Image (tube, rainbow, N blue to C red; front, side, top):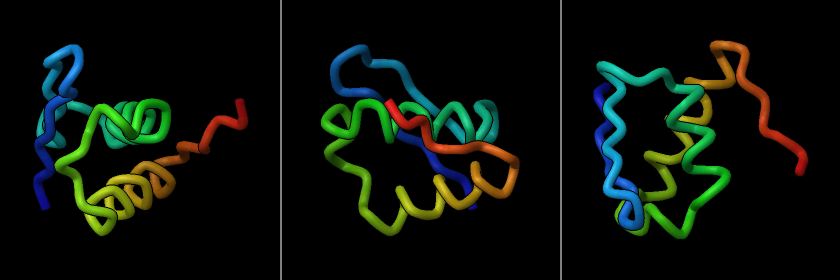
Length: 60
């Protein structure tokens, strides 16, 4: 499934066809307020995809 979303502050777009799930998950976890249009289900799918590729949530 393709995921596309835009950071409402920086206007950077993320697209799962071009960006890694790890990059997308970092953005969603570190700045959730910048992505008000992402559903909890879609966020979980992206994070699970990143974790399957070896990504771990930072603990800071």
